[in-house]
Image (cartoon, rainbow, N blue to C red; front, top):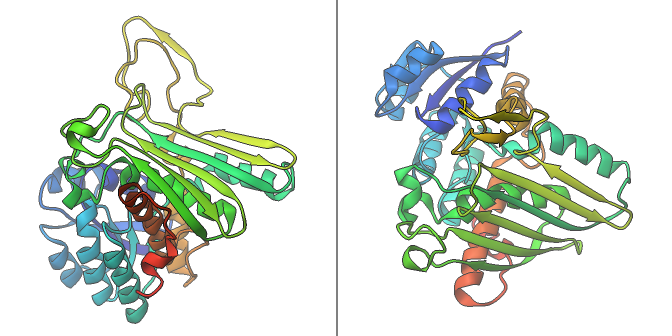
Length: 354
């Protein structure tokens, strides 16, 4: 079995997710990491031998087949371009970029250099979603009419998520990009119209007055095949990350609880360690996550990307660079619609850029 040699750019939250998921993939061999801080602590934790202070140094020195870009959003563009210029296949965390122009440039560069660009949309590898898709494909709920999906929690602690320049926005680009990509994948159609509403940031936010971007956003989407969707991202949800999906069809309904549907219930008067992402209390009744790395799709996602590199396969539907660009355009269309008070066709934002 051919091992795929992997380098990770970053050493914080997303990098931890990737390193843990790769450790559960027999074909993956994480041999290098580049980060400006926390470098040796991260590398020691995961047993990564090669350590670099910059991604430029890593790309020029390490022998790699695949790079995971786990940096703040605004750095996705330059890092992916540098990896492509070095002839390396790339996994880019969400969102693909902070602007449609940068995202399109990344897709073009990877295409021109003949390298694979994988968009890390973990929802599309979550076992619950894949099983629900099987049920839907069997015709259990008839034809899809309407999709409602959200990712919400109480807010990011990253300093880069607090600034529009470094994040690209607020809750919609940071969280709502997941359900946006999911809705497009499940609808199997491009969105023709987006109508968005968001809080304005700072003092106009519902809760987070120091956040430059919005702390609440919703997008109403109409796809070209007639399917409707409502996508939400917010930072005003207490009690841990809450990811939920409802799919309505002509003959039935599917409901999915990705994050708070644990089969375990615990009552504790003294508390315990980890409950689930963003949960701030373990007192009283709680439902601790069993294996978020698997249940949220990270293991399946990165194992699939490694296999694609090892066997020279194209990215699956929904997780190519073009798919990441389409999801980003849906988010940017939401922002533009909210600002301009009109509906936006997301495809119009990027069709001329590729």
